[in-house]
Length: 208
Image 1: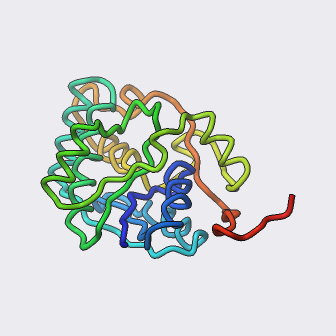
Image 2: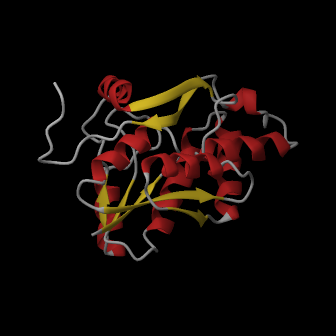
């Protein structure tokens, strides 16, 4: 079965890809508004995983809506959620049996509720998969320490292909009061995967 996974090149979406690859023919998909070329970082991550990769054009009006929402709110949460919801709908347009993302159990944003997941499945005729939905951050960090070579640092210094990069760029170009990147996005670290130690397939013994 084919599955399309929203992919940023960070540790969460990379671990989600490793989980799904045991059961699905996975294609890694990065949505882009065409604002930056940061999707290249995700392509490099896909090459390290040895999985097919493609970009998917997102509607620029959704990015504009998200930026407007963030400026009004004064924080990015609802804007990022708007983009993630749109990206899942766009991925569902692909000819795949399942769509997936790397959301964790304790993520604040983006999230997909049970009701929203069921709605997506019923309306679009796809399965929605969240391989890390039962994992908290600590468990994800432990798995990443074992299986991934991860670079971590401030979001502006560690580029990856997530929605934040393009939304930051749009905010930087917005001349409205309260539109500065620093006033809306709190300082935080993010990760980008530089190397992958793939788990052995089922039935293959690994050295103790």
